[in-house]
Image (cartoon, rainbow, N blue to C red):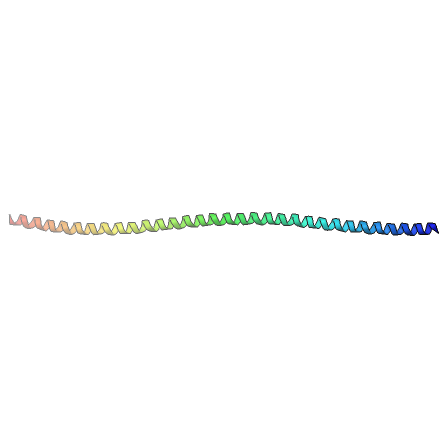
Length: 115
């Protein structure tokens, strides 16, 4: 009878050990999952930060290029307007000079005819 109690206690003890090992296993698996998810979240955070930084750099360079092209376009427009104004001023000067030259020529002719 002592052997029966002993084997019953033995099997009960084995069951307790088995349950304890199962709990430890579950706790270890839970801990592994938490650590893995934290690592994964950190990696995702690092990747997100790198992507955000890359996007900001792209926006900066795009804005710089847009500003440069807008500035260049404005400079070209200014040069075109100035050249048009210069052509108009030169045309007016030539017209005025021609009219003045005609008047001088007529004046010279009238003076030479009087003589």
